[in-house]
Image (cartoon, rainbow, N blue to C red; front, side, top):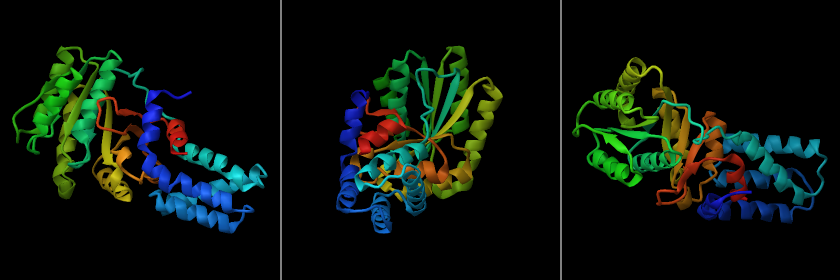
Length: 303
């Protein structure tokens, strides 16, 4: 039913599973009946897994409804319904890179250190492997080494890159990249942009300028803004996303470093609290370790 990535995902979620699934199993095994005490203990486990308080309350309410609706009496059957509730919250996956509507522009944002440039390289590789022509734009011009790092990834993924020197105007880089994308019949243009959240006004102005350039020069392109978050930061990632949402519209999340954390539950929190779909997840260092997010696959691997 699930492919090679499922095993990688299962392996990557080991730390989360240790704090999450094993404790849930323990609660259900020790419960004689389905009662308030059982629900309270489940609630505690969910909160400890970085699912967050609001999302946990929502999950427990939905679980109670399902248990009542299906007249479940045996605690051992609760896990099945808990999985279903979480899958429903995460929603159907809408990210099909086999069927991209081209031309497309992906604007990728995120603070330093979350794995933004690496994610762009890996996504470029994934999309190129589906026989699309991909171009990268190095528009994160303020961070030292960001341009060089993206250049290394462009070589690794086997895709072209448009760059200026460090400190140049990001919108100018995007302008040149758009002209190149049109001239070379590129299917997908992926733009690496800055993520200086501590200076929201500057960031907002910069992103607005980039968006204006794309709207004016490449109006026929489908535009998507993706935010990169680091799963190891748990609920802080949710807060970061909220701050970025004040600055610009976000279409999807790229969640990195799921393999290094016990806080994998943050995936559920992001979708529930922000109503932004997780589009890609990363569970390792390799070029193939970033894949499209599939809710059912994720929950199956989690359990």
